[in-house]
Length: 299
Image 1: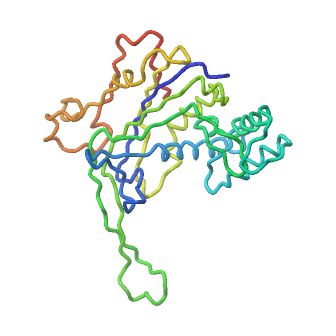
Image 2: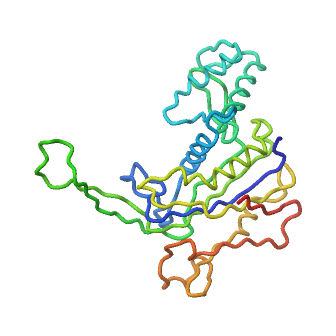
Image 3: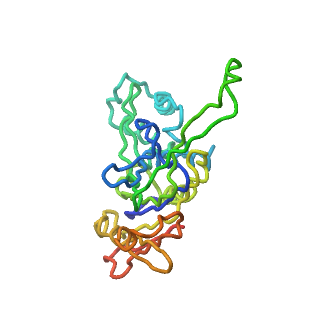
């Protein structure tokens, strides 16, 4: 079933004693906004986790391959489309016949979940066109400043026999003691019609956002969990209200000893730092919603 409604959504997830998204250009420190000290998680990182979840949950299911798979060779993926349609590729060029060019791109959308979801630029040596994806995800930002810690670690083993009498190897590990992050997402119904992104694909996407961290465990990332997903569903494909005004209805408060104040309120400055999800309260103002807009919480 094709997707006929626009969605704008807010995803909250948290990290405890882990590094949610290290920056390789900064010694793998947790990504941060240097002016506000709020933590950042890239959209690429979140989409990678969605891809990994779908790859595991739908392994071997037709139409759910992952194009941007780890260690994938993209030209080989493109060549499969030419082979399936009995077309001959020309270096860096699409077929001259518009119908053939469109058929190649459609084949890629039908077979690869992440192409019909996030889109792809496939104008490589073996060209299968470009796809603008209906699902877009923003950088995630922590609701409060984070305080990354650098932890010293050691190992009791050595690599080479000649080093057996040397002291143990020292290393460093970067963690965020606790951080609650908020990301925004957008689902464009007209683009979904072009790529074939369906209601079933949407249900799978919601499921991936819920469970993606459970298939992404590692010692480096600590304890991560998706906490809440709030989606604004529009009756029309083009939308019934501006996304930023809808997002303003989602608020986060700090809780302490029975008192609740908005995040950033000076009254909370002397409170202990948040160390668990229960130190926050997420509320949604559902009064007087714009006509044609409803609130959906898929899980």
